Amino acid sequence: MSAAKRKGTKRAPAQSNSASKVASKRGSANRGVRAATDKESSVALVADELVSSSETSVESALPASEASVGSVRARADALMSALASGVGRLPVGGVHRAEVAIIKAAKRTSMSGGQTVVALAGATGSGKSSVFNQLVGTEVATVGARRPTTSTPTAAVWGSESASALLDWLKVGTRHLVNERPSDTKGSDTTGSSIGPDATHETGYASYGPAPGLELDGLVLLDLPDFDSYEETHRLEADRLLELVDVFIWVTDPQKYADARLHEDYIARLSAQDAVTIVVLNQADRLAFEMLAVCRNDLVRLLGTEGVIDPEVIATSAADGSGIVDLRHRISEIVASQNAAVRRLDSDLRSVATVLRSGVADSEPSLDGHSDASLVDALQRAAGIPVILDAVERDFRRASLARTGWPLTRWLKTLRPAQLKLLRLNQGASVRSGGISESDVRLVLGRSSLPPATPAARSAVALATRELADSAGRGLPQVWADAVTDAATPQRDDLADALDQAVLGTSLRARAPLWWNGFGMLQWILLIAAAAGLSWLAVLAVLNLLQLHLDAPGIGRLAYPFLLLAGGLLLGFLLSLVARPIGRLGGRRRKAIVAARLREAVAQVARDRLVAPVQQVLDRHRITREHLETARRRV
Image (cartoon, rainbow, N blue to C red; front, side, top):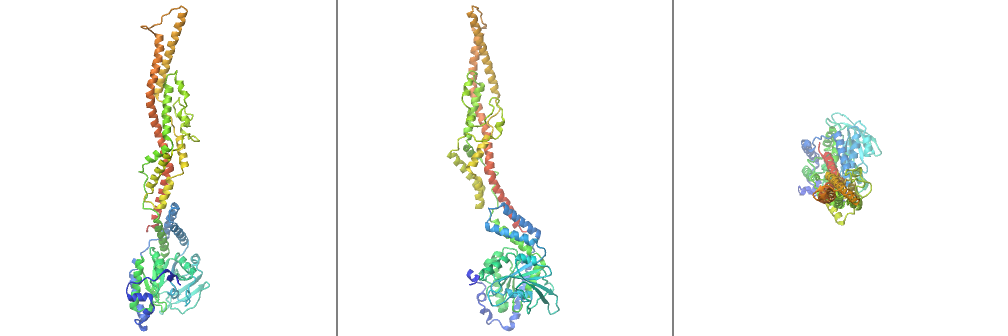
């Protein structure tokens, strides 16, 4: 059973009952309406009508392409850049097609010469090999009753320019060189030299040599295996070459013009491309004039439903040569333009870029206005920042008492260890100087002794990163949204280490406040005064023991030595009491300063480890989209 029959049934023509019969049965076209005497005239009339209509619509059907070798290479470069930036994120099938199209464009554009490769493709029994022989003017392709007849592609080459490199690339071994020379008024002769195992020199075919305007120099005509052959190798070979040729000529007949495989697998799929496509309705001699017109109109309708714009349909008869001149004339126009190859390459690249374009969105979410407050808050809790800030405040108050407290008791404060040292933070910082030491600004190797994040803190981080991923991935295709999610959720241990290093690298100290020096100096002055008063009293006591009475000066009944001792001790104690609330106020201020530093450090971790990777994915998406837009944009 043929591939076409396996695929399904023929498409039902909608013109009339007679058109349905034309598409399904040969006998209805051969009975009654057609007389032997008017067969050739009716075919000729229809052919003239088709040629005149096609000539008037050539410009609309095939708009002049601005594609060039340079534009094809630029489009291929843009597509290659899109594949590089979108690696792993674009549809696999589209990526494979793009790689094939890029390689094909590079190879085809590197070949010198201006040959145009035209392929005759058709179903078994459509007569494409007979049409091929008529175009060549001699029997090159084997025609016979055995089906399928064409098993390997055959090439016919016009012109003196060698097409060996091109045919080697196409992997076509059977080749025929066509040498046409001008003839007398009766026509022209077509001679050829054969290259390949299947080539032949047999003649006897109608010759339609180079009349004015029909020069075919540079044409490489291929006769392909049947695309519906029951031999899989034949079908695969036809499909392979159809991906490489420049121009498609689909040869069909009144029985199979509505074949589902032809329309669905080939014409519909290739209709989106800008490559030149011609449909040949062969075996037109089997139909009367009215039937041929109905059949042709129904075929045009079917092509239109498949997306073909202004379809070209040329009626031919390989049996008597009707319409062959018209087909040669159309082919000569294509060859003369010398842009079919770049049009096909340009079309392939644009087509695959359009397919890949469905793998990216029309725009990307912006992170410029994204508020990371909740994310930073969650990371701060996970990094133990509240514990650190409490330790900073307590250490400031402890340092305040150590610098401004009563000198006789302040040493007791040194017996209690500093909270930051317990957390292994800011080791080696000079408390006395209050300055920012080298260890405050360099990254301390190792880890802190901060407690691990609680489950609640970890859950808060997971929720915040999920919100970031949802915000950044909104509107993107699923594969890109998944990439955003992966970028926004790094390994937990890596994020924890980054936060710990950020804390270790943040200075938790600041310059000592000036009031510490003032209060500390007053405390020592008062202590010295108390010591002087005590010493004075001690001297007076010794003199009294020695019966050397000496009155100490004073104010009223209060002697100066007593005033110095009592005043120094009392005022020092009161000064230490005043320093406590000032120390608490300073501790809260120091806590706020360090909190700002730590928040910035944590925010930097969020930007580097979470936001930046997400932005990189969005940038890759944008670059991929822009390259695909460049690759699919019409020049």
